Length: 118
Image (cartoon, rainbow, N blue to C red; front, side, top):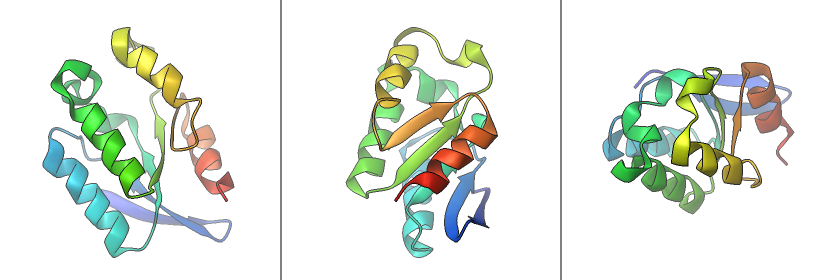
């Protein structure tokens, strides 16, 4: 799993670039968060595979539920607007109203949101 721990403004978060293809990838991320005692996560655009954005496959639902169950706050960067369409676009719109998972169109905003969480 490709990840790095970033420390800024006296906070730490984990940055993931590894594509999420199945539930075991989600569990690996949760394991990384727990083993490093870090509950802030930034997902880069490479993470969002067809398996994730196609809601019929269920991977997005599994990931979101597990992140919430383990109290992991997630911000995501998706610059390619073509990846946000259909039902996934509706999901992103709803998620952006929550304090658990947000999607941004640039890395700076995604990082700032995670760093501003109290």
